[in-house]
Image (cartoon, rainbow, N blue to C red; front, side, top):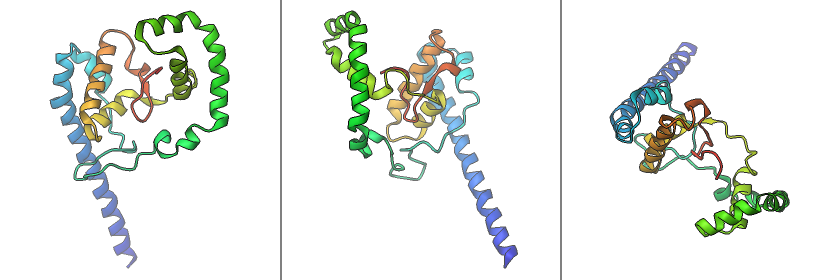
Length: 193
């Protein structure tokens, strides 16, 4: 009985490992046959593509993925959609407002110029900047190319993330950042809003 249980456990882990290896193989094929042609058409060199994507592994822990054979994504845990009351709680918003007032005074001329150019009120820009990134203080820890690549391959909106991935590759090609500098949230958000 114990031997049977051990054999079953080994089989389960082996099957799981081979399923992940197969998924990784599909991902690598996807990068070569779908993303590389789009990146090349956008002016990305093979060297840049390989530097950014060459050693990337799928991150199957990202919320909202649609695995092959599934019809619905994993549950998405984005705070502003699942618990807006916590996302916009008074203490959090109060700190943002206080900091926002200081920054409004400090950056008044820049905000005014942006408002004239784009028609977006400076207070709205500050509100989004504060809520989304704590005015640039939020840690953005994920490898952007791993996140964007994974989401381009197996998200509910692959076309969106394919475009975002190619745009990120083009940024590296133009020397705007190195692949190591490109960090994102688990949802693929990059940099300042």
